[in-house]
Amino acid sequence: NCTKKLYDLDGNKYHIQFAKYKHGSSKINLPQKFSDMVDIVTLLSKPFNYVRVDLFNVDGKIYFGEMTFCPASGWDKFGTYKDDLYLGNFWK
Image 1: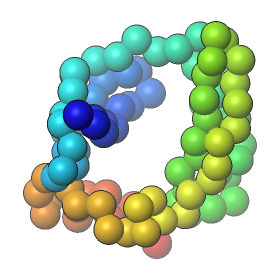
Image 2 (image 1 turned 180 degrees about the vertical axis):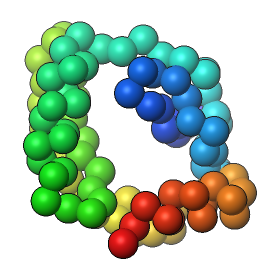
Image 3 (image 1 turned 90 degrees about the vertical axis):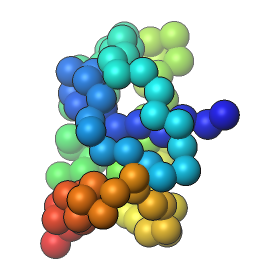
């Protein structure tokens, strides 16, 4: 019953889909202090071509999780080859 989704900075779901996960709703409510979270992620990710920065927001408090340079060790499959190619083109 796990879902995995990608959203833009306005909370709108990207068209990208993961092969083995449910797709979930199309829009989410952004958490408290979301703009602070974006500032933190922007600062931490600046030196890298690609990194996923995990932050958690619990009752308005922001916690750092981890920085991941290759999510799922590169084994996550996307719904289509087009989705895989789209995201792969961001890597340098």
